[in-house]
Image (cartoon, rainbow, N blue to C red; front, side, top):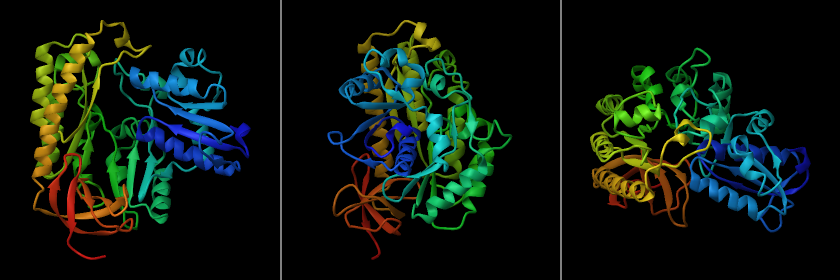
Length: 405
C-alpha cells in the first residue's frame, strides 16, 4: 500500500456494509499517505474493493478489473482472497489484504454519508453454510474487543454521527470467541453519553437463538432502532438442512414472534435464496408460507448462484427459468407485505431523526422502527422532531413535519 504514497487515487467499492466500511478506512489510510481522491480519468492509481457473493457480482468485478487493467491497479475485498485464479488472466494488480486495512487504520469506526457512522464489530462467522463463498474469504469469527468498539462509537458520536450502524458477517455471533455476548455489548454502548441510535446489522437466526431473551431485553433501549435483519434464506426445513444453516423455519418464527410481542412496530427484514439445488415446488411454497407468516417488511432476494469451492457447488443447478420465476413470485409477495406495513403508518405520528440527504429540498429521516421517512424540507443532520405519515411509496413513506426547527 505504501506504493500509493502521494498519488491521486480513484476507488470503486462493492458489496455489503462491512466492505464499504473497509473503503472508508482505506480512504483514511490514503490521506495519511498524502494521497488525494480523484475521478477515474485523472487518478494515478485505481483501487477496486471487490465482492463475489454471487456469480453476477463476480462477472461485474471481472468487467471492472478488465476496464482498469492497463492502469496502476490495486484490488482488495473478498475476491482476491478466494479467486485469484479468475483475476490473474484479466489483470496483474497489487493486492491489498483486508487485514492490512484493519491493521493500519486503527479505529474500527468510520463515517458514512450524512449523519451515519459505521462500526465493524467482527469479521468472519461461526456458520458452515454450504453455499457461501464469503465464509471462505473472511474465515472464522474474530470479534473486535468491546473497548475498541466503545471507543469507535464515542468518536463517531463526537464527530456528529447520529445513526451508528453495527456491522459484521453475523452481528449476533459477536463475542462467542471472547466469552462475551452482543446484549452485554449493547448495554455498554447505550450507556455512552450523547444523541445517537444504534442500527443492528445482519444476524443469523442460529446465532440469535443463543441470546434471544437478553437481546430482546437489550433492544428496549430508546438508543436502539427497532429494526432486525434476520436472513431466513428458505422456509423449508429440508432446504435449510441442505444449506447447513443450523436452524429450522419454526426457529425463525420464534424469533420474529418474540420480538414483535415486545415491539409490535418493529421492522424485521430478511434474505431469501430461490432455486437452491433440489428445491421442489412444495419447498418453495413453504418459503412463501414463512414469508407471509413472518411478515418480513424488506427482503433481499437472490437467485441461487453456484460459488466455487463451496460444498453446494457439486450439486446440480435448477434451470434458470425456475430460479427466476420463483424470485419474481417471492418479490411480488414481499412488495405486498411491504405495502401493508407502510399503509399501517398512514395518518400516524412518529418521532423522526434526520440522517441523510437524497435531493435538494428533501431530507431522509428514520423513525424509531427505522421506517424510511422523507420530509420535503431541508433539515440539518441530527434534527429530531415529529411527523405525521401522509403517503406510502413502498420503499419509503412521505412525512409532514409537525414542528419547526
